[in-house]
Image: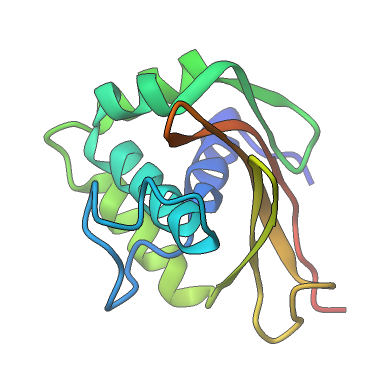
Length: 161
């Protein structure tokens, strides 16, 4: 099945972080966000999605490392610049927020974090399939200068065969 560029970008945006609506999630720039812990990596990944849907290009410009790439399920790469430009279009609009909220309601998701030194891999998965068979996306974060930064993301299509 062929996806349009718009739907591919929307899928990438949604998969960036799937914890936006967590009832007890940290606030932007909350206490966990700069911690070199699994909780810190999850918190900053949550902030990332909020930044994209709210048009916070300042956060994205600092968080996404030069050379950052997001590879969608079709194998196409989306650049840092493309993501920042897409976020800028969301400023003063509720459309992206509504799309993400609807997708998340229809697709329950849980998060797993693997840490090794200055690297965190934040994975989002279908809880019905678990973290080994239902991974929708993973973000590779690097802890540098006292903060987490995104280097790479990979997205997939999960099928419940």
